[in-house]
Length: 280
Image: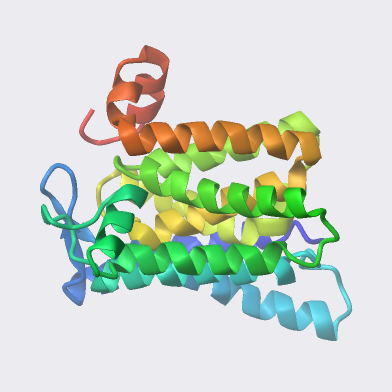
């Protein structure tokens, strides 16, 4: 019954997400999006909180009633999901926003470090590396496979952060990844493992697409962590290496070029990207 986390978290999110957006707005926690609209921010904090609320009864019943309501491997990966979400929240809360001198991308954060400045983005990157190294350890991997899996987890998390430049884009990427993994491996294991976190993301996508809230780094980190864990737990050794090559190539492209311009130049991707957005 470890599939129950997905519908339960969706049901809770239908109530929690709208209430959370109102709470953020009432508290003045808003930020301008790419069109200059002031939106509730960061929605990712509401999504993570909703998942934890769904987790509470499941964890209690899983232990006390001796029923399999949670995937046993969730104990390993939840540390990374919540950890990178917190690091994203730190960046959302203490970062400098989108000012001209704000370090952007890995090159920007590395340059800031060379100049003696420790940006919240650099703290986020270092913290994510530590968390990834921790959760991937203890799986009996050879040194090369261990380092490759750590890199895949970190780079996937960062890639979804790079994708989160338009409403709903990161969420759509996660849906496509999850569908591809489930159909390709003919399994529902990804949804059973992290459905409790994926459910609120699905509900939250409606509100990001309607431009009522923004994920923030809290949300994009959480979504990227879900995607990274799905890749690590669904693919075999060769598949993970192929995924690492693809994710690394996309990350490098995103650091050097505009992902948004690339999507706009490809009609099928442009149509998928704009699907459901209010500005289209």
